[in-house]
Image (cartoon, rainbow, N blue to C red; front, side, top):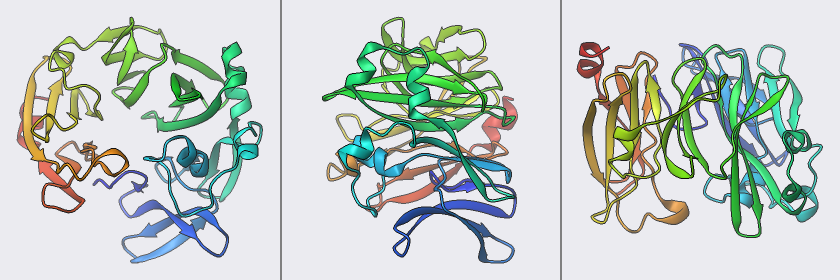
Length: 308
């Protein structure tokens, strides 16, 4: 099954999602049981990425709202400049779901110490787009820093102990794991923006020429075996495209086009955010072509079964 971002299935029965408590003035994570039809656990840190029913990772959504308003939550108070400059007590946290214990995993200060640059001292920093690898042995994330209005990105990897930089050409957007060691992402590599496949162990970068020739620009990839589902931003006619790409055969399949009204723009835009179901038979996506923000799915079982 599948759910919108920041609501994740932990197993066949339990899902985790974010909430806000007015009493504690905190963003929280709750676990809901489908079988019991009730909330069965609560945690003091919100979820950003999760791994089965074992653990999940958190970031500071107040910092994220300050740096990227279109990604942050708006329930809590705004972060102040003193908090923005505090890099030792903010960063990435990990919560053990069974014990409900949370600890700081990587402070921002340690992230800045990984291949440091002189410019870091002049910038504001945050992390975003955490994504745990298939075996749960590590995760990627974007270290994003700003010098005034100018944005810089680094793609980084953690094995839950040490950090390393995967890509540092100033621009990293959405990525997804293909295998235990390879990811696909819309990034800058060789001074050119586009979809690339990156090996986190060897550093090898392979340009996805077939995808990039479409000139759709940045998208949100989701992978199932050799298949990549990806979307486009609205074109001049305000149409968004959802497509499939086969990494092994270079086959491209356009699944659908949907309309996005001009009233949805900037922070209120609606990206499709395609996501494969766990068995690869369905792709869910967000859309507003019916006048409201809704969650849809499309059955791709015939394509996947016949070509996998």
